[in-house]
Length: 432
Image 1 (tube, one colour):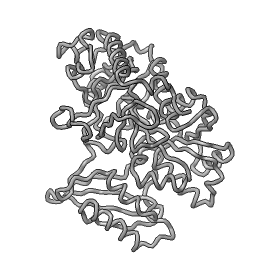
Image 2 (cartoon, one colour):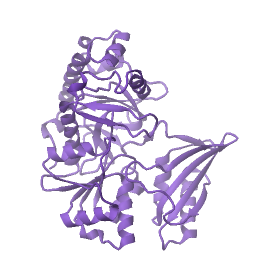
Image 3 (cartoon, rainbow, N blue to C red):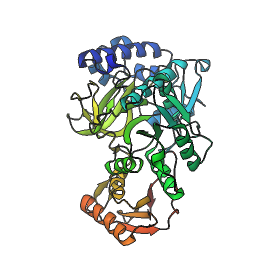
């Protein structure tokens, strides 16, 4: 399945912008006067739904920050004021992981949950999945939206969805083998963890006919060294995807993998702004993703500051889609960057360098400050037959060459670092 909705994905840019305007006007009409949070925000700047006519009018709308949504939630417990309908209209509850602070609770109506399914339909079809695939989702489902929506996406493309909850990692591998799994959705960390357990247990991954892995939930599939390792150990293609509980599944990698992820522009409007000045960045320059979802009337986000750093590319893709792309996917976060001895350091950059060493099984990064100077410390857990001196030297030289920093590297016993199924927490800040 090359496309999920071909007529939309290949729509000329002018027609696509017209569709975005129509959806935006419709959403504003539906939420104004009913959604307290956005009615107050729009009224405060004198904006009425009927005054929105072009995408250029976006700049008249106020930006939304996560802290505002969290505050609105705490003001009116338990769900906040960013709800358009009575509670009885909603049938699903989820919440953010809380990685960057207080978990944000989100609600979906049957219509908006169907929209989530469509968003994931674009993701799955973009990676080439069809009704002939058997999609394995190796998680026990909790309130984090995680791969709940992938289940709906599988329904949309008529693929067979195989739930992997209630099992340990080795049991999941055996189930994948027994059922002939051809595709899997998981975090990059867990894709590598499955392979690690397979190696420890003498399980032959080649017995699973897996050809496609769709990664989400954390950076990794857009980090070259991590992606390469996943593809090597599984002998399968690895595809990137990005989204957020409060936003939706907004971008996906197509089968041609053109060094970036397509934005599902029929369902979202994106802007790329300088995070300091909040002005649009020149074409081809990195900035903060500001995004508006168009299909979640019951819990909208308008001009939402995602904190994600992206580079927008509107050139046509050889896959035939007119959807713009994020070059390299999501490159990092505005709140991830730390300064170590005067050098800007992003966790994803360090991971890419560490993962280049093939014998590193797991790692933990700690940045500590001492007299306002930063120190970069890395704990490495190596495979059982690794040459420790060689591994230490490889990682040390990669970081010195690429980041101009001398890390403090510690080798720790095999199995001593934590393993993760959902979002990994490998980056730590320590204030001395």
